[in-house]
Image: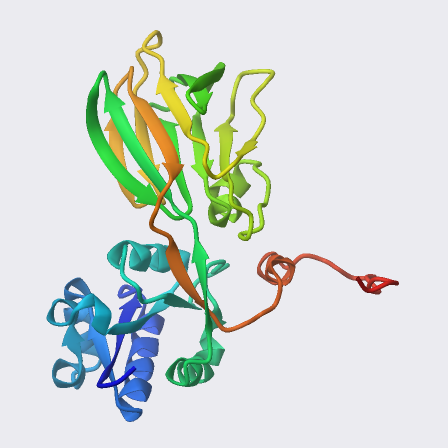
Length: 304
């Protein structure tokens, strides 16, 4: 890349640790000739922490999408999901530095911050594409909401005392009807998030698939489902109980659904691009992030 190198910085601005990390990253980038770029809604908080940024950084609206080389995200998985929303459709990949708890989407930890920036400046990373979901909600024949998700789309009951009655559908064919607290429709990336908590399977991100996981369903057949990437999933909210629902996309974008609403989920044409520093298999990530016990393992006798 010729000319000035621009790096978008997205931080959890309500955490002092993230603000301090942002100041350190920006100083290191500037020392190497890089230009930090900051979103308008984070400008005041970050400049208050590092006043020099007012002159040294640029606002996101002042640069074109092609100017951004990479987005560095400082926070937890929620911050990374927010950055994915902010940069939706942009070519620059995201690189997450975990300042939260599990940080499943993050590629580096706080103690590796300096080395991480050095590798970014040296282009020492690979890029991995993660599939996303496209979602549309309709009431009668009217489209009332459209959005997308990296992790999951959920349809949940809006009232604690009243369960939802739903029909689930795969490839435009009805599969089952039951009462429940909700339904999670997930990507493989989201299989270790809400879907995991609801009892869904862990799906390796290299697998192209969509997941459907019922929440507290009152039915004999309410198992988690895994379907192919070209399939469509749908949830219809039956009117007979007069229960309303709320739809969430990645726990960030929400829409209220009345009885009779229909939600359709398919694979989106726009992936999220993640920068990777490590070539370790996904198995190792599971062990490290969930602190799984592997004591006693002696390795395979025969190597394939």
